[in-house]
Length: 232
Length: 217
Image 1 (cartoon, rainbow over the protein chains, first blue to last red):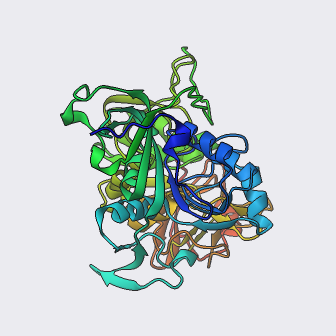
Image 2 (cartoon, rainbow over the protein chains, first blue to last red):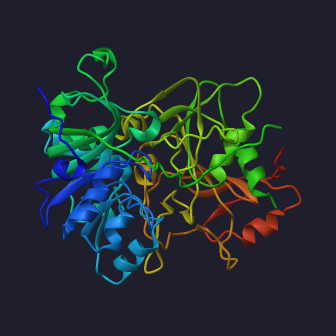
Image 3 (cartoon, chains in turn green, red):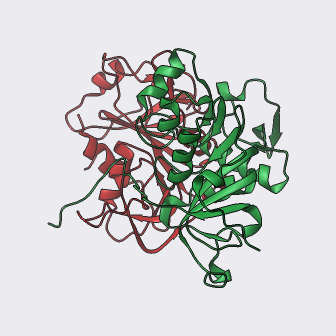
């Protein structure tokens, strides 16, 4: 099996105006930088983006926001992006904020064939409005529905032609669950290796969830909050 | 009145040997600096780390290793990395013993609001709603009053809620309080702060029972 595509532009072929895409990453950590750049080049518009965050003004999904390519964001936290806030408050951008754990589980469920599940998160808050409530073990839970997407764009450390993926550090975050929930999942990797080079015992995401894979380049890996301690 | 570091220091006294602990952004993050001697705790960061260590030495920071506040961190021996779904399975499944987080308001029933000021600040709840809905033990770290001097310990929260009837304990710059069925129960006061000051700074029902000791920091 060989799922390798030649470039980021080839990898995102088929993403059309108005589609729903999942984009992996937490903050700027583990985001598919090359796929995002390709989407900016392609100029596709009216996207619904499911991603934990919305990047910063000049990086990550912020680049798509700048070009007004996103119609709706489904996220848990969007605090680092002024252009995002402006578009949201002016009504240009639709925003659906959902608890981070529910977001992750809704993606996982979408990929796992579970149409909906009950969670205690958000009970009694405005995000529970209109959702079915049921008590289990004496505690109220709300019904959350699975999420899927036309495309999922994820980033891994290493991958092989079969689409098997290994992530590095906390760059794993939402990438595996979003890869599971994409009708077409595109993985960009820092290092594309030969079949057999990845130890099957240490593969984080089996290739069955990945349809296209390519080696990205020029990773900037921008750090949002560089925090260090002194040697003394 | 306690400084931010001192609030963190007081909360650290609540840690118990063997606990897994999730620390929120801000004052809660500082709790990691004051783990009492002789006990071992592991910090969970909801973006996917167990066994989170201190900030890295300059020059060794790694863009692929951050905490939930997007700060560069390290991982300790015995630590592990996982995806967001597994991370919240740990939280929802109550495998994490303590959550410490900040708040804008807490009600006398233990409701908490910390994610949205309608029309002004809409950053999102992040993992806070999952954490407060599931954690057995939730401590709130916050200032007792807001910038306008108004109490943050209220009869009812005025801001959109993050969770209902979930906060168990509050440590502020003025006091340590338990949230009980009858209201806020004053346990300790900050050094030099009078019970009268705490009464005046608390809008919700406050129970003052007998002599209130000063915190030991």
